[in-house]
Length: 324
Image (cartoon, rainbow, N blue to C red; front, side):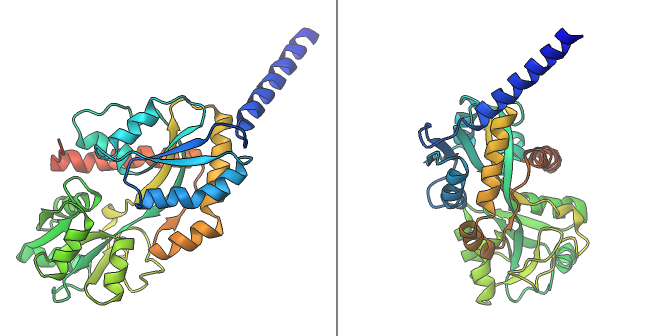
């Protein structure tokens, strides 16, 4: 019995010290943590990473953190680099939800498994889409747009095939009987420009991109995706408020590491990331953009990834959308 107790105590202490060793692996003399951003410099993910670095580095005993932009292949290039990296916590992926929940369904083949090859660490924020319309369109909200389109089809633009805006359009058509004619663009700027020029009637835009045009009264907002109204757009109803609950699936940004990361490393990084998301610098920079800063636990984030992967997969399969 004594031997057994000693063995248990020895194992427990070894586990404790091993966990502590992992958690304390971050220091000012450690190799830099690399944030791989699968998008060009200057975009939301790039700006978020740079805003987080001061607080996150301080939380990790002064460990240096750098940003490495790897755009290309619908975020696949950057994601695949992280999937193949060592699971020591020094290579991280800061990316949009599409990487793990949409792209695996849109491409015939990708060089990573969205679950086995990654460790979810924390969601940073949720961000919805705002449905913008021409000022003269005879619909005051998204529910009225659905009804209007059933008698007279409406042209609805998105930033491209397979984007979240496109998927919302397909959901409105298949679930709620709307008749929206999808007009894909190659990015956000062109769609908003043509909306204001009267070339398309509706545009599914990001909240941060649409806010200046809504505030300037150049377009009108019919709805925002999500459960509730946004503080930055208090007069715009949410899709849930309008009874369009299926569209209550938000975009998000999050941080992943390679697969099979030690729990203690995940815990240390999660703590640092959550502190960074709540820092005055990040709140001051991102709250006015209409995003909901979250900073979730690793387990909460993992559950969201799996839920959204299934939900978007169903939409993509039903609409037979492919981007290759």
